[in-house]
Structures are given as C-alpha cells and as structure tokens.
Amino acid sequence: MATASKVPAAESTLRVLTHLAAQRGPIPAAALATALGLPRSTVYQLLDALVAQGFVVHLPEEHRYGLGIAAFELSSGFSRQEPLSRLGRPLIAQLVDRLGESAHLVVLHGRDVIYLVEERAAHRPSLVSDVGVRLPAHLTASGRALLAALPAAQLRALYPNQAALEQRDGRGPRTRLELRAVLDRVKTDAYATENGEITPGIASVALAVHDHAGWPAAAIAVTFAQDRFAPGDWTALAETVAATAAELSRRIGGRPR
Image (cartoon, rainbow, N blue to C red; front, side, top):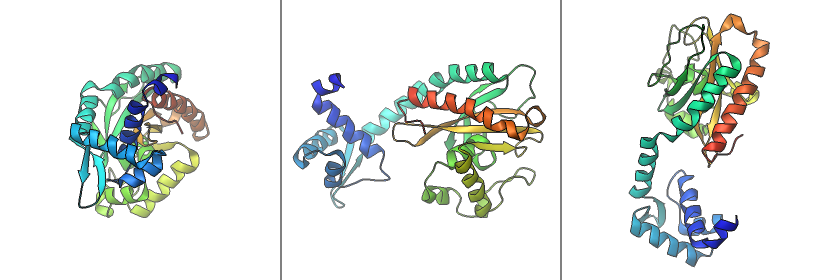
C-alpha cells in the first residue's frame, strides 16, 4: 500500500480501468466517480488522458465511457503470453501428483470449453480431452463450474433455445430447465460434477478460477474412473481441487470464492 500512495495518479488510473473492465458496457463519468469515491473533476482528467492514449473510448451521444482499442491490445498481449497456462501448469501437475488422477485447466469460449493444460496420471484411462480440444460446456464438469458462475442474462444468451444444448449419446441436460437444475446443484455443492456424460465410465469434479473482478476466468477439473471413488468421496476430491483453484486465482490477482 505504501508504494501505491507514492503515485496516487497511477493508482487512480488503474482503478478507473479496472472498474470499466468489470462493467457490462460503457458507463457515465458520474457513475464512475461515485463508484470510486473520486471527485468528478479528477475522473474527467483521468478519462481525458486515457481517451487520448486509446485505453478508453468516449461515446458522446450516450455520455458514457468504455474500454478502448489499446485496452483490447493489452488483452491480446496477455493471451499471446499465455500467463494462465504458464501459471496453471505447475499447479495442475502438483494436483495430479497429490491425487494420482488426471487433471486439466480449461477456459470458456462460447458454449464450449477449450483445454489449455492437460496432465495425465500414470495408469489411468485414456481421455478424449487434450490441449486445444473443445467440448460442450454444459456436459463437462469444468464447463458447468464456469456456467454456474455466469449471470442469468449471459447464460440465457448462450443457450437461447433447446437446440443450443448439444448432446453426446443422449446424456446430459436437454432443456434449459434441466441445465438450470444442474447449475443450481453446482451452486449448492460449491463444485461441479460430470458422471459419464462425456465418456461412459469416466467422471469429473471441477471448480472455477476467478479473476480480479470475481469473474470465472478458467476452471480446474480432476477426471477419474467412476469405480475408483464412491460418490460420497467426491466432496473430498473437490476440496483438493478447490485449494488448487484458489491458488491459481491468487496468482492471477483474483478473488477466490
């Protein structure tokens, strides 16, 4: 904190960008000033500087401000450097060593999850997942962990009708009502599960990794043969996965839940 106090303008600028990044869309300067507890004159000065550098865009007809192209370029640079994979890979490897089961790290992309890190445990069943593979989010434990953390409006946009709920062998939720029941269970249990809906005989438990704004940035899952663990033991598995998810959240500057 002492370091931040030496450069209050820099700290305030970062607070402006962080707050804008956490919003659903552009917001008025007055709302920004109120949320940050800063004088309006200060906020306008910061916004003018950020607009000039391309980090913020001003929408004059709407009297609102949102993130600009330069902020997007920072995001693209973040993606190119793959910090999530780099930070997550050793933690996933440690999780595999601890449990003796395969584990992976995924991100949500549309209605799919994409596998960023995949660590296979020795002498365990082969899996359909691998780095770069996409699978329907609503059928995987990791995808369900991410979907359960999304606002209801975003979830409705992802799954506007029954046709959006892709099926594999007729297993998994087939309607939005069934999907909501699955995600409600995730919230109740504080972890997500999948039991043979991707591959018969294979199950998974998963938890989300949260970023600085509390949004689900990724998910970590452990996958195992159904006959290796009784359902009553899944909670203990989830607790171990939760510790790994919390540590990755911490490493990316997030807020574990």
